[in-house]
Image (cartoon, rainbow, N blue to C red; front, side, top):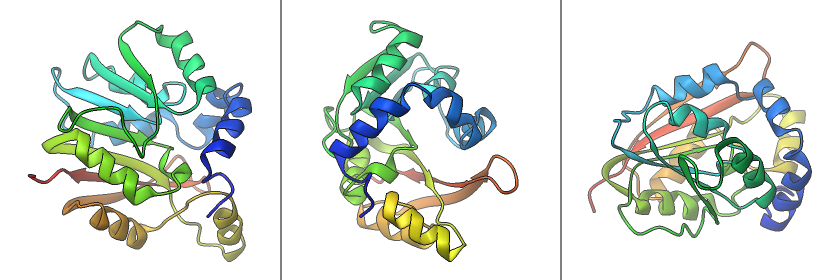
Length: 207
């Protein structure tokens, strides 16, 4: 387990990263990648969408272009403060502070659940993926973006020491163990040589 797959360490990490997050993030996960991922979903104007690990609201901004019914959840108070500055505490997004492994929502609440740049910090990703499935309506969609496993052996060791990086085979295992049957992986990249993201779109099966 990487050092940042610990919730307390991750919160401390984001206490400082939140100050520069919006300036650093586009070098790894930019608007074109975000919008490409959003296009993989069938979001209707009346759909209720949950953004798990919403951070400062980068993905939230794109999701708001598709529906007004957006909920954001993050465990970092510092990241949420940045999101409040963008959207307001009682603005168009309903924000919650919480844990991806124990979502504070009832079963079958959302039409779509989105999570980008969060799974790498989850100590128990399969448990969290089950939670995403639980709060999504049968037939709804779950989209998860995480860091693709590096090809270079040196970077692999570094990645393993920091947080969760995974390839398509590992994604297959995690999503299958979490109870998903129908899912697809897409590799996204901002530009040649930049970090790659692995984006999975899954349909939630009937109960």
